[in-house]
Structures are given as C-alpha cells and as structure tokens.
Length: 449
Image (cartoon, rainbow, N blue to C red):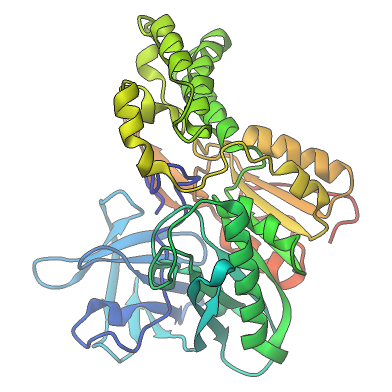
C-alpha cells in the first residue's frame, strides 16, 4: 500500500493501505500467515501482523508505527523500517503456529480473538459478493464500520488490516471483496454509482449479521471509496461516514491539482503550471470520452509545448499515461481503462445533500488526492452547518503516511501519521473527535458532535 508507487493507475485510486484479513483457520501450520492477527502487548500497545508479499509480513502499531518483517539467514524475523527496506533494530519473535504469542521489542503479547462470521451476499444486478463480519468478543453493543474499497484490485478479505485493528479497540467491522476482486463475482469496475449500491448491500448484510449488538453503524471509505461512501450514505441510513485521503472534486480535476502540486514543488511558477494544465485538460478529454475523441486537440497542445524545458516534468494523475503515445497506440490502450470510470463526476451535490455526520482525513502532501481544493470545499460545507469534521495532516501523503523523499524526488513511506487510527476510532464510537491527534489540523461546524 503506502509507498512511492501507484497501486492503481486511476486511483486515488492508488490507495490505501497494504491491508489484511482476519486469521484464516485454513492456513497450514507451516505457513507464515499463521501469525497474522492483532496482538495485545503487555506494555499496552496493539500490534497488527498482516500478510504481505511472498514470505514476508507487515506489522502496524495502533499508534501509527509500521514496518516489514522478513526472515534472515538464520530464520529469525528481521523488522524493516516502514516501507524503506532498511533494518530498524526492532526485534520480533513468534511462537510456533497456533501458539498465538508474540514478543515485540521485548514486550510479550497475546493474539486477540474475535467473533468472525463469513457471509455471501448479493450486490447490484445479482452479483455474488463475499464478506466477513469481525466483532469483538462478547455480547455487548458495539459500533460497526463497513470498509469501502479504494480503486485497488486487492482482495480486502485478505489484505484489509482494519478488519482486525478496529475490533482490537472495541469496534465491529464488515469487510468484503468488491466485485471483480478476490473471491467475489462480477467484473472489476470504477462505476461509483454501482459500487455505492454494493456498499449499501454490504451495510444491510452487516446490520443483519450483527443484529442486536449494533450500537451505531457507518462507512469508512479510503481513496476512491471517498466518492463511493457518501453516495451509499445517501441511499440508506448510516450513522457516520469516514473518508480517508479522498476527494471532493472530479477525477479530471484531481489530475489538474496533482500536476499543480508536482510542478510547484519543482519550482515552476504559476504561468508554467497553467500551460502544463492545458495538456492535462486535453488528455482528460480523451479519457472522459472513453478514448473516442480528443486526439487532435491533444496532439496540438503537445506540439505547442513539447520543446519547452518544463515539458519533461509534466506528469499529473492520468496525463502521463498518454504523453508518449500517438493516436493508434492510445486507442490500443483503451481497453485497459474500460472500467466505467466517471471522470467528470462532481461529488459536491452528493455532499451538499448529505445529512450524515462525516469525518474527512486528508494529507497535506498528498499528490494523488491533493487536499487544497477539497479542503476548501469541505470548509464551505462546514460553514453552512453541515455535520462534517475536517482533519488535515500537513506532512502526510496518500494513505495518511509520512515519508522520506529521495534525491530523484520519489517518496517512500515510513509510518502512519500519529493519531490517525485513534481519530477514526473515536469518531466511529462517539460521532466526534477530540482536540488533538498528532499534528492534525481539525475544523468542524459550530455545535457539531
């Protein structure tokens, strides 16, 4: 998940989080994924162990620290700092498969157990979807959150770690593989309207499975899920919506805003940014027409600026995909992007009509979901009295992670922003947030709870 690479071509599309699943009893005893789970340490910390790639695992602490786990030549687990690949001197040791123990930085821990119910349910047009309700042990009422995908194709049932991290702090979770991913049926799509109907079906399923234990229930949508979750909340009752690193602008505007951030960071003045955005607007016409129109205009603006010194630095969210290609090559690429993506979708009418309390958490250094215009629009809604809360982590990028920047400008994530998980926990439980979560800047409507 969080690193310097896009996890999806059309994200914000690039999203969240290399996420992970509740422990599967079918794991073989010699499979390292037998260690997957959330652990409570004797020093009070909560550590989640998630599947990653190959023979590696990933750990996350509720306070935001994160790292990768791999075995060294002696078979001992070595922790690597964030997503950097560098050793961080944190010692980690597990017992044998099935022992449910961990020793993390010298602190002993026990794997937490949850009440887990797997469930088939039906999305729009009869598409079969696979979901899972993960509840804290017991019979008491708890809040429940439905996790809404970003644009990633990963199987959320396996990779969405929030399905354990939230139950570890007293919150129920419903997680599901969206259509065309993991174990669910259907075809992968970025049709927000269709995905919102699927999310509504997931909500209904979660309510039914959790029954009398539901205290309050809502959505958490990350990245592209930030367009989908508010739509779903307008279609069926929900107590809250959390949007993590999402956008209150269209996909085409996202491209323009990413380009502005990138070129401004490289030191280019506004007049150069404006010229580069001419190219982006022309590229957007091709995408928005599903590769049917716009080629002449794109060719003309490229020819106009190709000789400029700044042209090599033009990137954006989607523009860079077309820059090197002629019309024939672009048309040949078209099927790769035939996902029903609503490039011109304006989320503002949905947000304006929405009466559900919402928490938006944005990264101030997020290229993939630039916060500037989205935060301005949310601020306007807050000023009108909408029950929205806006939190901006000034140094965070997509995924609400902090990062290092290499000499070539590439980024590598190091950890999640302090307080990010705690802020979501508090909003899910109480419909409000406290005064301080790390360095987040928080604003809300007067009288909002």
